Image (cartoon, rainbow, N blue to C red; front, side):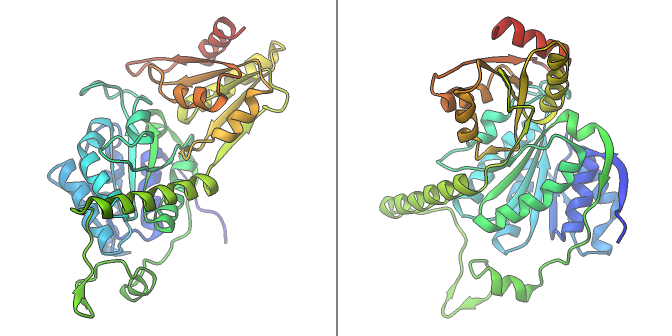
Amino acid sequence: MSKEIKLMKGNEAIAHAAIRYGADGYFGYPITPQSEIMETLMAEKPWETTGMVVLQAESEVAAINMVYGGAGCGKTVMTSSSSPGISLKLEGISYIAGAELPCLIVNVMRGGPGLGTIQPSQADYFQTVKGGGHGDYRLITLAPASVQEMADFVALGFDLAFKYQNPAMILADGVIGQMMEKVVLPPFKARRTEEQIRKEMPWATQGKLKGNKRNVITSLELDPAVMEENNIRFQAKYRKIEENEVRYEEFMCDDADYLIVAFGSMARISQKTVELARAEGLKVGLLRPITLWPFPTDIIKKYASKVKGMLSAELNAGQMVEDIRLAVEGKVKVEHFGRLGGIVPTPDEVLDAIKTKLM
């Protein structure tokens, strides 16, 4: 079968991939720079072809609670937003994590704090990777660096969410959401039938009595001893995810004296920085975390004994750099370089930061 290749925005790729994955529902609310996800879904009208429900809710809070309801029924459901909108969804995301339900959340980050700017940012790292909402929970977090990965990570995100009964997030920045590249679209996948849901997901609420009891989905537990047992189970699951689902990419790291660690659009910029540095005879490499959680701690720790310094290149004031410093355990110098307010740096700026901060 020939590949289906199209030119599209990262946001559009998310929408097409969701339809092709066989998603049951999307519930969202418009906000720049991710509005094209819902706009594309509305234009494609998947309810006429695959049966996918696409609904603009009255608010971000309503949207995430619709996801909560759909996920509780074993449906493949998702939402998307941008930074301030994700803040509004955090209570619902914590509920979903506490109820151990699978769903996919997309955050195309913009500058802040507050309403901020519609320009790109990576300042939601803390909000997502550190939990964001209340309670000891984790989000499986995928950081795409291309339009192709925006499409590919829809299937990966859903698969991981269902595998671990845990919400997953695609954490992109405005550059990746708005840029256009060619993308190989995935093949269409059939939606799960009600019979498959009952067979594969016995935990799901199907609106029917099971014996003399309904299967009630909730994150509420009034007995603190039981709540502690629940949290211990959650933490064991998170450790399992950390053991099995770390993903990263290395670029010219084998002989590197200096290492850039960057994700999303900053990884693309930093790859060019590596090429510029090599042209000057400087041995610089790039490590790109693909999963921000679980974070590639072990591989960064390995390089701590091989390189002279590391630079965390981010579109923020310094967030991922904290996890890098924890990983290296003080064995090597780690510095941060970032631009704020929606300013995207050039590869030369990153190279200058290496020279001034690490050399």
